[in-house]
Each structure stands twice: as C-alpha cells, then as structure tokens.
Length: 161
Image (cartoon, rainbow, N blue to C red; front, side, top):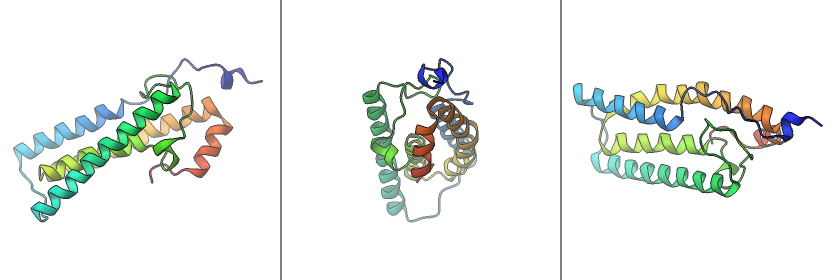
C-alpha cells in the first residue's frame, strides 16, 4: 500500500498566492488605473448594472457554496493548507474550480457596476495567473494526493465550466 496516498500530506500545493489575493489585487489595480485614466464600458448603463449585479450576487453565492461544501468535508478551503479530502459535491459536480470562477464573477460584476473598463482588463492577467500559478499546481498536488480518485473526477468534470 502506498503510504503517500493514505496518510495526510503535510505539504500543501505550492501556489503563487491564494486566489482571493490575486483577484483583490486585480480589482485594486483596476480601480487605481480607472481613477487615473477613466475608461467606461460602452454599454447601456441599466443593462450593464443589472448584469453586474447578477454576476456579483452569483459569484458570492457560488463562493459561499464552495465554503459550505469544504466545511462539510472538514477540509481546508485555502490552497495554502493540505487537503484532507477531495470535494466533488455541490458546485464541484460541474466545475473543478467553482470558487475561482465565483471570485472572477465578483470582480467582473464590480467592474460592470462601477462601469470600469480597467477592472475588466486587469481581470484577464489575474485569470492567467490563477490558471497557471494556482490551478496547475493544485491539480498536480491533487493528482499526487488522491491518485486515481482525482483522475476519475478530472475525467468527468471540466476545469471551469
């Protein structure tokens, strides 16, 4: 029996930074750029705000559901801590990264509510960082930690949607 797959791994995935910090950093940078060089989104203001509100509320709800399912599974939400259990329920039935999707939705929703093009533009490199400096490292860690169980999960559930 391979002990590395049965004993809890003490080393967490080595991610660049927790994604909430990456997304908050993008939001802050976008707002600073917006204050310095205002760039509105060129869409109908009412439709923009309604879409932004839906994205914001949907993103918060999605991230809240993730936290509930992680707590139920008694495993840390933070990628800076070792996973005790693979969470495949709730939003994880449809996406392997629903929390990061929810966080991106929050930032995009705020960009629309604030009519701030810079926030949306800065969100793109943040998504790149999350994909390649967080998700890729988490996937490698989960593959090592959970082996075939994670492989089966990964084969049936998409990375994003």
